[in-house]
Each structure stands twice: as C-alpha cells, then as structure tokens.
Amino acid sequence: MAKIRLGMVGGGIGSFIGPMHQLGAQLSGRFELVAGAFSSDPERARDAGANYGVAPDRCYAGHAEMIAAEKARPDGIQVLAIATPNHLHLPAALAAIEAGLHVMSDKPATATLAEAEQLRDALAAGTSLYALTFTYSGFPIIREARARIAAGMIGAVRKVVVTFNQGWLANALEQAGNPRAAWRMDPSRSGVGGCISDIGTHAFHLAEYVTGDTVSEIVADVRTHVPGRALDDDANILMRFAGGASGVLASSQVAVGERLGFTLQVFGEKGALHWHAEAPETLRFIAADGAVSLLSPMSPGLLVREPLPPGFGGSILAGFAVQYRDFAKAIDGDAALIGTVLPGIEDGVRTMRFVETAVQASAERAGWTALA
Ligand code: NAD
Image (tube, rainbow, N blue to C red; front, side, top):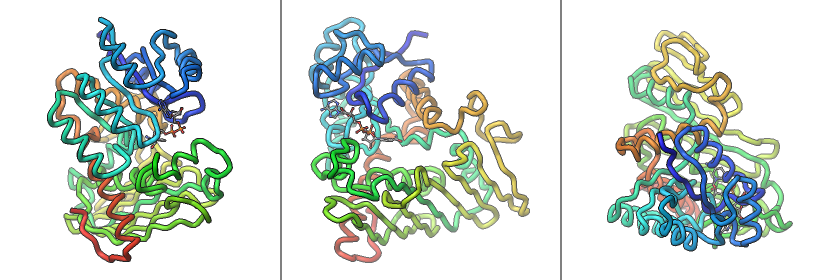
C-alpha cells in the first residue's frame, strides 16, 4: 500500500511530541513524514528536518509556506500533523482545511473554546478529516476498559476517579528560560488554561472515553500555586455524568515527585476497573463475582485485540501508532472511526468547553455549573 504523505508543523529539535508523531506515524506502517515546518527559525527548521530525514528543500519556515509549496508538487503532503504550542493549532488547521489536507492535531484542539467551535465549523464546510491525538485513548488496554464498560461487564457506572499529576512545574521554570514551560504558562500561547489545558484535558477526555458517558456539570477549583505564574498549575473538579455517575478529577503540575501520575478508576454497580499510566499495559478488573484479575494485552478473553508486539502496548508511541493507523483507515473510507474510537473535533470542542467552564466557574466560585 502506498504510504500517506505527512507534513508536520512544530516538533523542532528538543520538542517532546514531534518525534512521537513521526515515529508513531511510521510504526503504523501507513505514513511517511516527507515535509515539515518544524520551527519558525529557518535554520533550526532545516536542522530538525535533517534529524527527521526530511529533504532540505521540503523543510519550510512556516505552515503557510509549506502548504503552498507542497500543493504545487505532484507528490505533495496529504496530511498535516500539528505539534506546535496551542495558539498555532487553529491557524495551521484552518490553512490545511482550506487546502483540502487532512489534519492530525495534537491536543488541545485549540487555545480557546471559541476557536474550537470555529474549527468545527470549518471542518463541516470542508472535506478534510480531522483527528486529535489524545494519545492514551490509543492504548490497547484503555480500549479494552472502554469495551468492557460498553458491554456492561461492570454494570452501570456509579463513580469515576481520574488523576493526572506531574511535578515538573513546581518551580517557576517559565521565568527561568525553559522554553517548554514558557509557552505553557503564557496565556497568549497556551490559551485560557495552564495545567488544566495541558494535562487536565487528557484526564477529562479519558474519563468520558472509557465510560462512554458525558460530563454534564462540574464544580471547579482551579488554582495557581507558584507566585508570579500567569496560568493555573493545579485543578480539582467534581463532576456529574449525564448517566448519573459521580466523578472526581484531580490534575496538578506542582505535585512534587510525580512524573506521569495518570490514573483512572471506574466503579460500576457490579464491578470496577483500575488503570495507572506507570503500569500502562495492565488493567485491574474486578468482575461481578468479586474475582480480581490483572489483564494485559496478552490475556485470554479480551474484547479488543491489537496486533502489537509484547511490551510495546503501554508506551506513548503505541498510542500514536494505533491512532495513526486508525486515521489511515478513516482516510481509506472508514470515517466513522473518528468521533468513536479515534477522538475528533467534537472531543476537541468538549474538552475546550471543560477548560473554559472550569476556569471561569472557579474564578467566580460558581458552584455546580453546567457543561452545556
Ligand atoms: P515543545 O515546547 O516541546 O515543542 C514545541 C515545538 O513547536 C518546538 O520545536 C518549537 O520550535 C515549535 N514551534 C513553535 N512555534 C512554531 C512555529 N511558529 N512554527 C513551527 N514550529 C513552531 O512542546 P510539546 O511538549 O512538544 O507540545 C506541543 C503540542 O503537543 C502542545 O499542543 C501540547 O499540548 C501537545 N502535547 C501532547 C502530548 C500528548 O500526550 N498527546 C504530550 C505533550 C504535548
């Protein structure tokens, strides 16, 4: 099968997520990174291109230049991957949609809710497919958890507890020249949320993805602990789900000692599920008869089988590989994968509504607030 030609904006040298997109796309077996606008500095963009193995004449200084030049080539890019700070997600996606390219964007969809809604409108008016790499929903064992709940194996969901804790922003790294911290705590580049946008969105998305339910109202306490910081670094949210479940979401980037404190617990009327990102291939499953099992991607009786090598299924790369593979299937005609197993623009709008509602409701001490 011919490889789908991918261009990337962002993901320059030293970036975290750019290499994950390239490697995940490559591991899916369906994509090849052939062009990029990896940095706004032309020299750095070329250096990054050399690292990625992209030809120098296909390394551009910006997404607009890349899209225009690639459009003129018979072998131009077909998909744009977006791996920049948040404020560039919307303009890059809009330019791609206008050029008829498909878009594989990193989360959050945009910097604000209004932008996410604008993007949804542009997608509705165009022909491009759009998916969002909420990476953890590409993990095979997370998909198993989702399938078990959908199959009624723990009964109706009563309680959801989700945490995403990190400690790397416990000090004001953004004021000490750390570029990865600087944009995250700058409202003009991160958007309305800091921690809640950066990792709270992962937690919110996972809670809805695995339960198959939607959060209908929240009580939010979104705070900033580090002096002088412009955005939040800690968020605690009570949630009520449309299906009746209660929920708690705790997310922090000042949780000293935590690197990937991402956990999900779902308690149903009959059984329960527990997952921790530090044992990412393992799902602790409590069945209706009380039997406890530790499921892995090799366990018998799984509802979801992913053809991944042993040991591979719990890495962030596996999430990217699975999601790029699903995106290729969507491009090949199975567009219904988007918005079901593969996050799409509706997930993007919902998560941005969560961020904005939580930040505003917390500032106003509003109590229970609808996620309309
Ligand atoms: P980063 O700071 O490590 O890298 C950002 C990159 O974007 C840098 O290489 C920078 O040079 C480049 N860039 C900045 N402005 C640019 C421009 N105008 N044109 C081209 N490139 C430009 O950030 P990161 O951690 O890689 O995060 C990037 C995005 O990925 C963010 O939206 C973030 O939320 C998301 N992210 C997702 C996950 C996940 O698990 N899916 C994990 C981390 C980050």
